[in-house]
Length: 287
Length: 287
Image 1 (cartoon, rainbow over the protein chains, first blue to last red):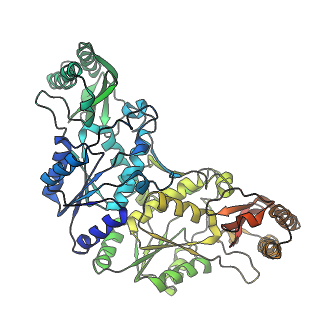
Image 2 (tube, rainbow over the protein chains, first blue to last red):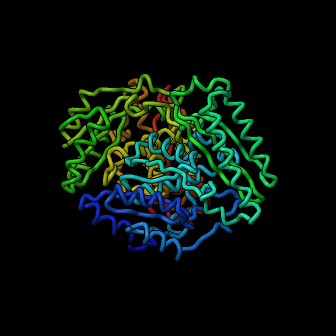
Image 3 (tube, chains in turn cyan, brown):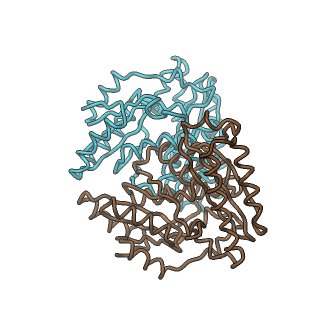
């Protein structure tokens, strides 16, 4: 396994592989790798000749009052996870390498960024869009792997790839959870013991929603209301959003009439604050 | 020479060339080819193994009151020009092939699109940005050739390529002119005989400006004023814009003090209406 800090270094490494016709799987991350990232890498390892992991805390996807400065970093631990996951190349550029000047170019995605995290974090998905596009151009992967915890991010990336005819396959990978159900996130380290104990309410509420959905006795509106009440039963939880939408279009659906929408996938997505820490989770239901 | 109307067809053709390590030169056009386009193709032919020409009148770069519907088209003549220029593949997709749905993704470029044609034609460069990006992703050229008549378009494309780390070399090609000096343009066919006769004032004014610049006796402001007067001496000419800017940044410069800017290139760009027809031209001065 090698680590490249510059674009030219990386591309030189990849050139040889590509001239041999090898397939490249790519996992873009912001580092502080956990078992969720490891599962993406595992998936990439199984289906490609070469696995590239990028570690880059992208300043452009953080808002002015967000946690860019305190976002957790641990390159040594990340290198260990990467090695154990069969990564061939770590690409870990500096901010200056990725943004030698403030970009004048902006990539915006309408509709799928209007709701959920897009509404709470203005500009966030513009930052995601530009960094993913840059990384795709730099790495030129055959396949790129994204976790469904950030379901909206997956929808945004799929939209960009489709609209811009990018020649990369986006592979959706399932959410990985702690034994008690909490979705893995680099931000979980921010939680106090009490917050951590209560945070399990998120996955419990979503699991409860799935039961209600499968029972087919409630409208979407009633299910959302049940979930809301269950989330609010945790004293430290403050709901940012809780929405039932079509996926990946992220369009509002008629909550009174779920059966009419069973051709599409349905996404129940939530963001919940515990203190300063904002956790997201979701579940996706097939028609 | 072959013609592909679908993306999959084109990519199948290109795949074989690429696996043989052949270099691809690309000339994106809206068709109705003239000697200006032919010179781009000639340039591409000299420096690549394979030359791809795209012919696509991109609706997204036309404003609501612009000439999309009457934009001149002649596929038979274009095929002839392409054959004579040594083109290997013509890519001529339909609008439905390029935009199977209205794209949600938008590429905007700040600063370099604020002035000149960007000010007169709002949204024009967003349309240019998305179609060029799509075409680059579809064709994956090693080099792409653009004429400097659309100097601002070249600046926009270079900015996108730089900001998004696109792996393509943008080759600037000189303006090709009629014997009397009029810059070649597909829109020249719109001109009446009288308009055509007067349109030569544009290139004459720019040539005059260059004399004044080289004589170093006038400030930039004085040169621009001289050019304005010369343009206005043509009774049918109506100036849209006339500006002296740094290139390719397209920043306003201190017109009183040209020598201070001789490290940069200077662009004197103009757009002039003759009746409904809007013609652009420019000259670029080295420091």
